[in-house]
Amino acid sequence: MKKFAWRRAAVAAVAIPMLTLTACSSQGGRTPETGGNAAGGQVATTERLKIALITHAPAGDTFWDIVRKGAEEAAAKDNVELQYLNDPEAGRQSQLIEQAINLKVDGIAVTLATPDALKDAIKKATDAGIQVVSLNAGESVSKQLGAFTHFGSDDKLAGEAVGAKLAEGGFKRPICVIQVQGHVGLENRCAGVKAKVPGTEILYVAGTDMTAVASTATAKLQASKDADVIIGLGAPITLTLLKSVSEAGSQAKVASFDLNKELAEKIADGSLLFTVDQQPWLQGYGAIDALWQFKRGGFLIGGGQPVLTGPTIVDKENVADVQKFANEGIR
Image 1 (cartoon, one colour):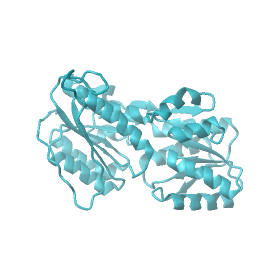
Image 2 (tube, rainbow, N blue to C red; image 1 turned 60 degrees about the vertical axis):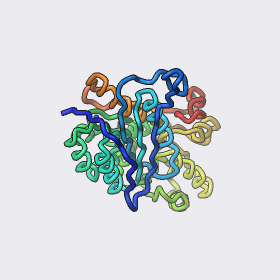
Image 3 (tube, one colour; image 1 turned 30 degrees about the vertical axis):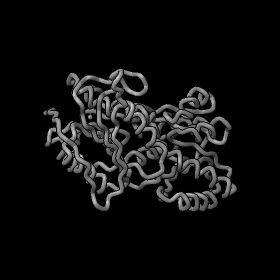
């Protein structure tokens, strides 16, 4: 599976009217007796940093819980006060970046699902001397927008890996389901599948409404009798597609991107062909730790290139190797 001036500043709680966001402060779990964290590890003795992790996560998507867990663990180790902010709407995500700038954070880790909408806000951050790394989406434009490194999977490569595996299995008529139109990472995944299996058809659904996803997918499967596999681009979508296949009386198989406990179970029992894991815990951990590493020694993780956390195919042959970690909520 992103010039350089750091500043210390007091951060006050600021709310943006009309924005839906989630915020957390990771205090590192320091105990007065040991100077370590609650898990028994040693907390960095470098100066306290304030870092904002700003994502396009929608409510209820377990994928982002895993990203956040990685970020919080890095924050606890690195003596970082972490703010987690999220909004799936691009304009509001841009406003969250500006909020972090106004709070004079030391660093920003941000997802770039809609880079054109975020580029001006990111430029304001870098112009203010705030270090930026990106994660999860936007690896092809990360450096151009001012991030000094990126943590994530190459989505086109991941799509091609799925397409190659499907072609190897004899599948010719995939339906690739995109839950957010215009999301560069999701579009690249389906483009990668189509590059290997030209018969791939794209289906757009409203990913924030699972009832609508189910009805749209069921109707499509009923109308597309030749569809031999349907692909979800995230765990919640894929779990819904499994139900749609049954409701449509379709013979199509189901494949997926991303991983969680439920998907691991579906792979193990044969309901799901496979999934492609981009290891989101590493994305969250790596992004926060990279900002600390820069402060610690001017280290530039990745040498100016994206740090890949995937793709990794998980199928029935190797799912047992990751189920323990999926059960723990870190895969």
